[in-house]
Amino acid sequence: MNEDYKTVVEVASLAGKIMLESHAESYRAEDTVKRILQASGVQTAEVISNSTALFITIDDEFMEPMTVVQRITERGNHLGKIYRVNNISRQLTSNQLTYEEAYSLLLHIQKTEYSVLDKDISNAILVVSFVVLLGGTLPEILIGFPAALIVIFVMWLQDKVGMNDFILGTLTTALLGFLVPMMIWVVGGNLNYDIIIVSALMPLFPGTAFTYGVRDILKGDYSSGLVRMTEAIVIGLSLALGVAFGLYLSTEVLIPWLA
Image (cartoon, rainbow, N blue to C red):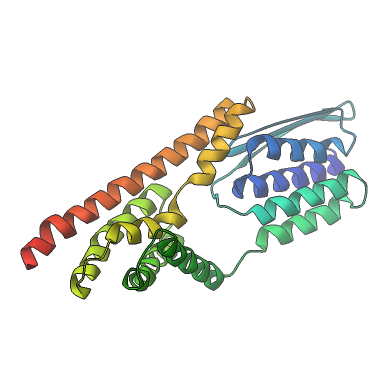
């Protein structure tokens, strides 16, 4: 096995993994990985990707064919990472970087992330902002803060326990559907819990996965597009089931019983 080609494949697979974990479209990830491979001068470079795996094969007259499979288990919206990986691939293909330098930079990108506190503050601002955008009154805006804390807590629990997206969506919406009407009932007044719950669900909506799934299908990547759209549908179903269950318990069972 040629050590130089092994380094090339390691760089390409790491770049592809970061892009797919950051919710890049499959055709974009494939194009970036293929450019990195071809910059080495290898005769044959084939790349196939979807939201769950990356497949790379290279071949040359001076080496045995090499195939690498990279499993993708974590996914999130990180457009900044996609942008930075693309920049590194351009610098690599224009001979501004060596493969060793590119690998070091990619490792740094993979480890670089917003802090947990930054994410929590951003999610809280997002939820409250949507309450305002949807026409919420001041009391509804104030209740939006504890609703955001519920979402933040379940996300923290996901990281600790390792819940999948379906369980995350169901648990979060069930808690929101149960606790938000209870908070409104305790506070009193004619408040709209629909605005608060919908706003609190915004960090969980799979809009990016669905949109990129449509884009992949339009690009001809049918398998990848269907995988992404299926992921979006499953997450959306979990949100609907959870909120329906939580609202039933609070508005149809507990609040009438307490009243």
